[in-house]
Image (cartoon, rainbow, N blue to C red; front, side, top):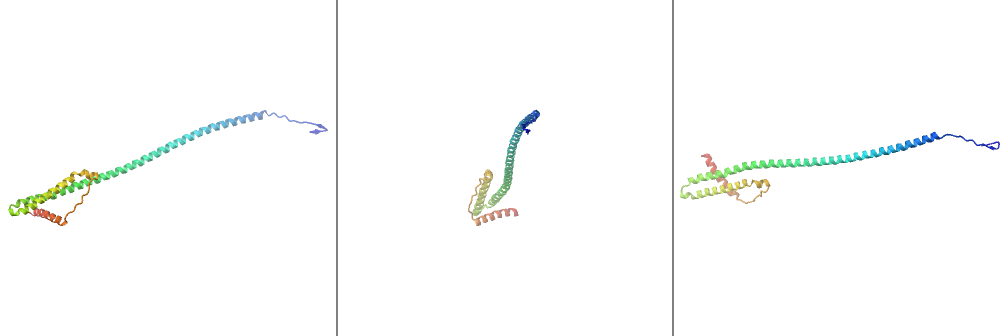
Length: 191
């Protein structure tokens, strides 16, 4: 400052030791805080990574369990289908045995009645009737053999290897044959 032609200097002396000390302390605390934040961030990152890893493992396990459950469900359906097929096969066997026993009775009745009738034809002029009943017996035996072969080939039926055989026949001749067989059964029943 200029005062009466003199330049005067004024100065203030201020002790900054405490401020410097406070600044250093603040800087030190700030560094310490930053180190703690870095350590905590690192720990948090590790924790998050572990959680993500566990999450992936759990997701994988869930997917595996879902796949296993789907496979179990599919196997259960397959088993149910197999059981249903087994039941159907059992029913087929039962029906087949029932049908076979019925089919056996008819030719056996024909044979029995034809044999009884053959015994009645003692005369030479009744040879045609005897031959007719002998042919019925042969036909019934052939029919029984066919039924027996079908019965013995049950494995083919179980394996689905039964091949249908288409054959032609004379309906009129079949009707006559059935009527003749029924006549023999009716005569037997009525006597």
